[in-house]
Length: 200
Image 1 (cartoon, rainbow, N blue to C red):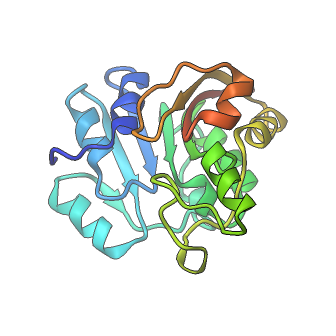
Image 2 (cartoon, rainbow, N blue to C red):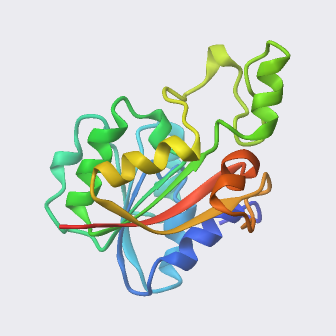
Image 3 (tube, rainbow, N blue to C red):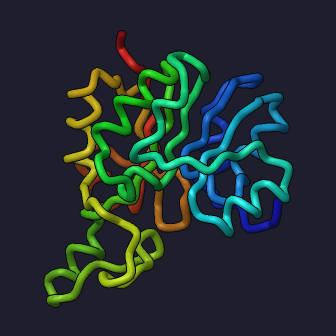
């Protein structure tokens, strides 16, 4: 694990209890799972990008190549304690279907998302340009993001799926916790981390 660990991953790791069984969907190079191993957690990463998958394997992370859009049925009900979906929900074809699957796989989940309604993106739209920022670094023609949402629009989706929001932690552009109320977070948070649990 290098010195460039994303600050939001450190925060996510703090939200996960010791010795948890963790499924990290869209795990990238596996740095979150590496960090969690230090807390006695066991887990599995899922990654479809070949270079990231190889890097995770080289780092000693248990990772498998599955398509989140179609293959989450491979995981049994309650087979993990926590599912993590970090900066990945906006990239899947049907976010609602993926959230339904993860609430079946584990009672608890951690979801992080960039905030597409951040003030800087709104200001850029007023100039006639598509938003770009540290959290949204891709030009419109080369982005993996399929869905764009504000935090204000994301939270009703969670509630419609009986996913209770235990905590919402707004983050600034550096990925650090940012103390904001709900209304201010939708304008000033660059992204947010949600700790959720499935009401069954």
